Length: 307
Image (cartoon, rainbow, N blue to C red; front, side, top):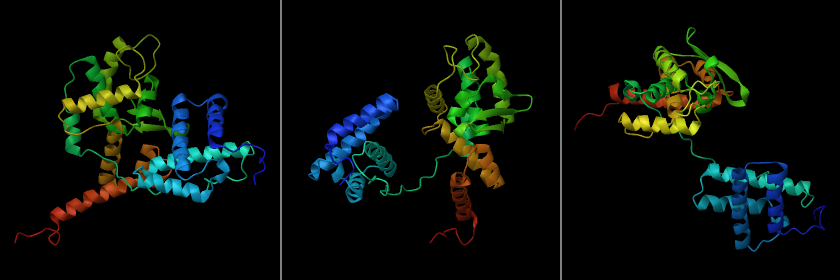
């Protein structure tokens, strides 16, 4: 029996108290708290289906059965992992409140997600996307954004967080702050440098007084990530790309094209700002696919002969 055996262990009251704790003590955002509420509601539905009512009735076996039920119903492994993470936080709260003695969710793992290779553009598609003559200041800005994303492999947050003082056109570099507050200096290619020069001339008339952001919106304030996403999608449609384009696809394309031409995995890791080289190694799988296609087209023993 748990140390707090004198406590009522009915699920619903403890769920309410936990959500209040997230809201008032941890001060999480309303959206985050709502996500926890949905995950706990899913667990409560599972409990009702299995005749369970108290949190002490939930052991590792029951939570594994819960995860398996989510998987059978088509929930993606990443969503199941997030759901289990929420449950671990809930049970940690119950431990703190001395309702239970151990966290039954600690040993429960989500099913492994199938490895998804990032989608990329090939060199011809990138060329078609960027071979444009902007007709207004916002299009000049958009081309500079696209050129910089592809030239330097920036994350969306790094692009929108960049200030004018981070860009050194004379040295052809940009300083960005990545995940975990880690900074790095990246080269800026010739085409991106030219596009940025044109944008900076237009920016002076658009930016609000004192605004330091490299890229600003129509109102003169720092451009938000969602604004960049919308403009990139719009640009791709106008250029007849024929597929959905998001900023991260340009980062993936940057990494893949560098590896195809250099095979320098460590160098690409540094440019992307990956703390762990295992994160960068996904691009070697893309590179292998590229080489396999060349092999299939070119090797005498690989080509199929007509019958």
